[in-house]
Image 1 (cartoon, rainbow, N blue to C red):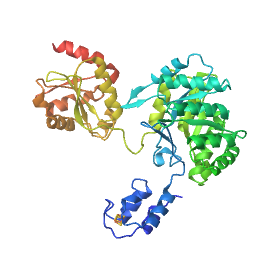
Image 2 (tube, rainbow, N blue to C red):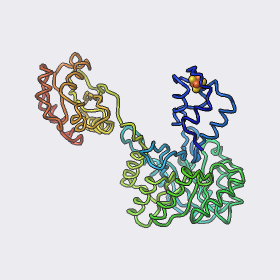
Image 3 (cartoon, rainbow, N blue to C red):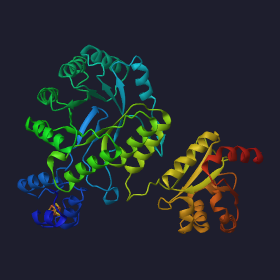
Image 4 (cartoon, rainbow, N blue to C red):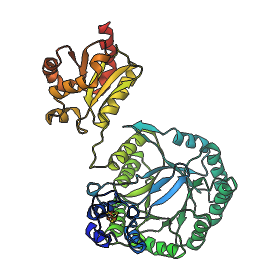
Length: 453
Ligand code: SF4
């Protein structure tokens, strides 16, 4: 059970030697309690105290690592019920189901590989493949896996209830020396096969999903698997409706974090597959919002990916840290002394949208990003952080007056009212009103450059 800062402080030597990098033992204790410092940073703490704190600070939800060794995926280790209490740490893994009876396995793998998009400076993609032993045939399952590994190095979940199929697939990975480079997850152990599946998971040292209808049955099977020494477990309670999904996932998270039920402290896998694309997307969205660590999808068209990527990225950002970029003048393309200069705020989404649209315009441009505490243009203006005086000061300090052979500054259309005040403070400059929306920038810039010539 996690200790408070004061409880940790009581265990420390209380000599304020500063060797941990903090001014006092109390300050250090508070940081350890918040998970922002490690007891190993205190060389003065005894081994006994270190052991006690490590035990107390072990995560209530186990972190499970799988996938590529050089790019491992960690799930679990969440610390709160609500994002605003701290933050959610390890984003859910979006997984595409491929059946071993599918005739176009290579094509489907290709689709997964091509799913990557860049959004607000982050690369998002379908992260893994769930290979389902739909045929119930050992050879078909193994052949399908062979096709996947021939095509790509990608994290895989092996979906079969047949221990022979599981062993055959794992032997294939082992014989191809893939098992040490790409750790799969085995789905699943149920009431009927738990003895064999735990043995296989142990033998190959891979995470194992425990599946049963309802929390009580799952927890009883989790206890059986734990008793066999399996630590990397995942939970599937087989919810059939949105209500069941919300109820089961919430109860599991609450039991792990608030009641300290160790058997509930594992990541959750959710099968979002539904007959309709609409309901599959809604189910997957609920799973992202409510605690699922792996979400299996039946299909991954771009429109669905975009919805789920955006939701996942937003839910797993830190609510206490505004998404912002560093104040600077960024060179987009081969901008030179004749290139236009646009100014905006350092809200990350604004930066990436504006930069993306400048790139789309193919017109090399200087992009001035002003530190406005990560606020968007209108909010920063309303808060007095994106004012004429501050913009003028930023331009003067940026060195752009000397660098550019022109003196024209493009400001966002939303703050057109600042034009006169900026020109008063920068008498050499002419202020040009840009568009309100970033999407209008390519046309605006092309037009602007045409009229300049
Ligand atoms: Fe206190 Fe240990 Fe930090 Fe020294 S190193 S100030 S004893 S917590």
